[in-house]
Amino acid sequence: MTGGLLGRAVEPHHGEGQGQAGGICLNCGTALIGPHCHECGQSGHIHRSLGAIGHEILHGVAHFEGKLWKTLPLLAWRPGDLTRRYIAGERARFVSPMAIFLFSVFTMFAVFQILGISTPAELNTVNGKPLATIQQTRQEAVEERQDAIKERDERPVGDPKRAKYERRIAEAENDIRGLDTAAKAIGENPVKVTTKLTGWHALDHGIEKWQKNPALMLYKLQSSVYKFSWLLIPLSLPFVWLLFFWKRQYKLYDHTVFITYSIAFMSMLFIVLTVLGAVGVSTGWLVTAGMLVPLVHMTRQMKQAYQLGWFSAVVRTLILSWFITIVITLFVSLLVLMGMFG
Image 1 (cartoon, rainbow, N blue to C red):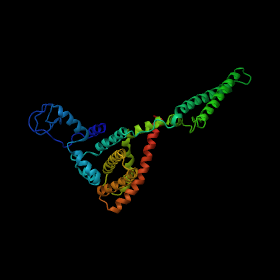
Image 2: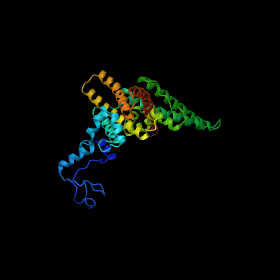
Image 3: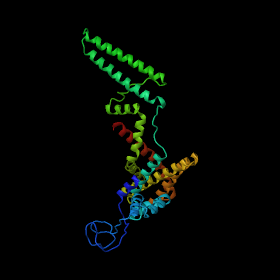
C-alpha cells in the first residue's frame, strides 16, 4: 500500500475524468465546463458514501480503474511496445514508469517481509553476543594500555610515577590475554584490534562497526536497499546510453523509461517467484525461471523499444547483462559505504 500511494503521488490523475459538465466547482466556485474544474483541477463529481472510501483506497493504491490492467500485460509480454508508446506520448493510458517502479519495489519488499525473508538476526550462532562483548572489552583494554604507555613515556627515567603506569600496562596486557583465552574457549580465534587498518579514521570506524555487529549492519543494508533502490536508475543510465550513443534519435529520457519499466518488471518477477517458492514449487524450476525470464524479457524489450533485429537485440542484451553486474556491484558498494559512514 505504501508503494502504491507513493506511485500515485508521482502520478496524479492523468486522463481519468469522471463526473459531469455543468454546475459550480465546490472548491473554488468556478463554473464547470467539463468533468474537472479548469481553474483548480478538482473533479466535478463529489461523493460522500462509505463505499466510496474503499474505492478511493483501491483507486489510489493500484489504479483499479483500468490503467494498471492496461499496463501489466504490456509490461510482461510487450515491454518494448509499452516503452515506445509511453515515450511517444501515450501517457494517460498507462501507469507511468516511476509510479509502477515504486509500487513494484515496495510490494516486493512487503512480500519478503510477509514470507519471513530477511537477514539473519545472528551471524555468529549462539556465541555471537559473548564474542561481541569480548571484542568490546578487549578494545577498551588495548586503549587503556596505549594511554598508559603514552603517559609512561612522557615521564623521565627515574620518575616514581612511571611505576604506576607500568602497573597499568601490565594489568591491561593481562586482561587482553585473558580475553583472548575466553575467545578461544568458545571456539573462535582471539579478537583482533582493527582500529588502524587504513589510517582513515572514518573508514576504520565503519569497518569496526561491521566487525562488532555484522547482523545489525546487514539489517541496515537490507533496509537501505528499498529506500535507495531508485539509485539503480541513474547508475544504469550511462551503460544503456553506451549501447546506443551513436543513435541520436534516442535521448536520455528514452533510456530512463526503458530502465525504469525493466526494473519494475524484475521486481514483479521476484514477487511471483517468491510466492511460488512459498507454495512449494521446485527450487530448480524457480532458479531456471529466474535466470531465463529476465534475459528473454530484456531482449524483447530491447528489440521492440529500439526497433532492432533479433541478432542486434540479443547481442546488446548480453552486453547489458554484463553491465548489470557492474551496476549491482556499484549499488551494493554505495549502500555498504553509507552504512559504514552513517
